[in-house]
Amino acid sequence: MTDPRVAKLADLLVNYSLELKPGEIVRLDGGTVAAPFVRELYREALRAGANPRTRIEVEGIDVIAVGEASDEQLTFISEIDRFEIEKVDAIVTIWGDRNTRALSQADPKRVSKKIASRRTLTNRLWERIDQGQAKWVGTRFPTDAHAQDAEMSLTEYEDFVYGACHVRADEDPVAHWRGVSVQLNERARELNTFTELRIVGPDTDLRINVAGRDWLAADGKLNMPDGEIFTSPVETETEGEIRFSFPAIFQGRGVEDVRLRFEGGRVVHAEAGNGNAFLQSLLDMDAGARILGEASFGLNYEIDRFTRDILFDEKIGGTMHFALGSSFKKLGGRNESGLHWDMICDLRADGEVYADGELVWKAGHFLREPSVVAPEPVTAS
Image (cartoon, rainbow, N blue to C red):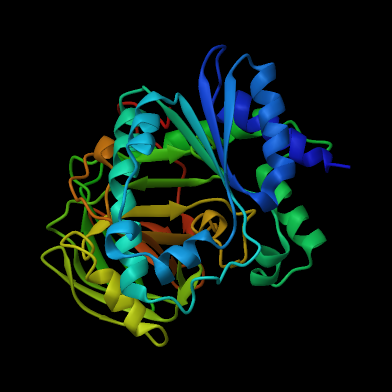
């Protein structure tokens, strides 16, 4: 019997996150392990009058491709995929794995090459999303592998995931996320008025310029769960040093104790306590990989633990995260890269953020409620 929370989450994605309309084509992407959730999404999409189709990946395909494909095969992009990106109205990405570390021993340069080759499809999808021509949302289906990474039993992990999404039996998830949307958009309006942020913490003193860049309130339209506010900093203005105390996870592979130094907007020095070779290979992916594409405040205080899953970890209340690589054109970003790698800076115990010289955030919290009336922030839909 399917967990009733799975059906409730499917309803939330179809009718709140995507707001599917009759006749729209929605693609459901996931692995075989997520089949129970795919079925419920398919059912809800039909009820909404949409036309769902599934794209199910068999686990282990990526391992075979990285290990055995020629360079030409590894980077091949099918015209079928290009056509589909132009035609679908919505995509649901379901993250769920039986083995989260299947690529841990793979050649990092070949992993980077495969990722970079797919970026053209991702960029085109985001262009269509920004133009209001397509919609996308990503979410997690709980598995034993992810529960192990989070150091929980599967039952505990399911409670954590569905609790963070607010789809428990006694909850109204749509009402919850609408309320979150109001709060986050108020904060985004205030952030739109600032020019420079200075982030100070353990081994961290970083300045980013956000002049002319919009802030996006992430309120459950693009991720579920959600709870962050983010922008793309000015590409040439990042200066200083930052240390990421949480492991930086990419494609299931962790790099620990990452330290970066920026000059003129670019990473000029990088080191890691563990996984340094992988770090360097990703930084060398292309010309844009050493530039910040995103800066974000994590504001979901119901997510209070590190799980090795960026969907949750980037939203931990009281943290900030910064992504190396591609930026968001909708927010004013101009950086292009095959990389987009989120790294989390824990500011909950000893962190400060200054906005145009004023202390606005301390020990993981904004010091006051938003008090600025400003133009509407960019919305996710």
